[in-house]
Length: 251
Image 1: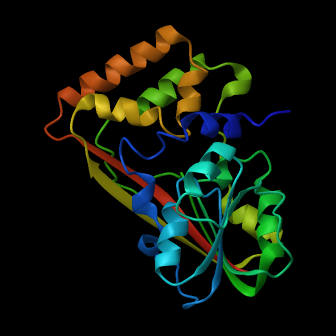
Image 2: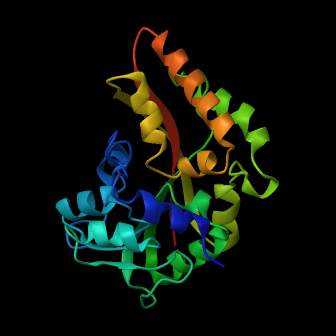
């Protein structure tokens, strides 16, 4: 059975992270996980347009990257030759190949994230570092700057029963079951200025959130858009403000 996430990213590969450079700002140097030293071997899984992989290479890592989307790989290969099509749960590398494995906003999308974590562990050297970001609950007092969260919660009831994309993700539990240690969790935040209200709506069409709208009836999709933009028009500033969770662990 075809993976709907891979099909989606094949479709959005050309526009991914072009409307707003959202994923670029979560790159590996911002997350402060590049500690293994120049020449260390790093694998970026679900590399997308290369936000993490290219930043890691600039820091002196020997970088390999994989993505399940052939279209994403074709785009990234223009700037990073060592990228290939592969799924997170079946990595084409020998045991103990990498000092660091990274994954930006990938694990919470997978049908079997524990299988992916087992593969990450297999290809890591003993003592190697795993670092990944996922969508998670924002810290107390966090203000997103728009009503998207409320609208997603409201309109999720109109999704088909098998189309819901809001399943909880237990990162700590999965890491523990897979045998990782020294697990640390950090809240991250980003704020990006928007040039107009419509920009946020266009941004939603360029990454994984598009699946929500693809599975929403056209009538509700347009209603969502109108309510999102109306809210932004009334705000004193136009910003895309989001939070995420960074997890690090060792093998």
